[in-house]
Length: 263
Image (tube, rainbow, N blue to C red; front, top):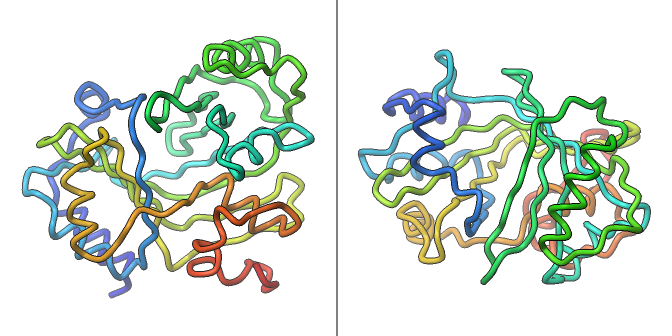
């Protein structure tokens, strides 16, 4: 049995929760995210150690879902460099596609008080190449509310990520845990792609005190790490960019590109 098979078996034993209930109990659009990169073989230990009341998101009988995110940035990479240099007023702009349902959302992430992440989103019906007038107005409005002046920004596609996600609800503290597997990064022109087939990105979404899942991960020897699907992926695919913020994760978990060239 492979590590992914073990993950499926462990998830299959959990009680389901529907999307409406998950959103009602733990929407967490303002939250503190903690991210961990784990070998797939460690996932059963994590899932086996969670409280017995943990529930898994299930939609139409499925418990793992395909995601695609198209990230937008400026020609001078204001979003990337803001994260790479740890600026307080940093941001991300992306179109997130839920591949199983065909739904697309334009999402803008900014930084809130005390390191929290604030996400705002609207349905998106564009073609992905450029932000239309309405989409651009939404982005500018969200950034302005975070005191980011975007009037001189020209946004274009910068990176695409695809992966499969399993989402867990932890009722005891109203938090969420997501497990992303099969992560692949690609440049929009298709010139380069990079996969991480034997790792999972685990993310907890909770308040500042952390969740029961965080405490379990710490007890298993895992610590939060600086990993961003956008920042880490673009740094791996474009080695000329400043990437010191993500180098520990790249060196430990992302050894080679899909085309066989060094990451």
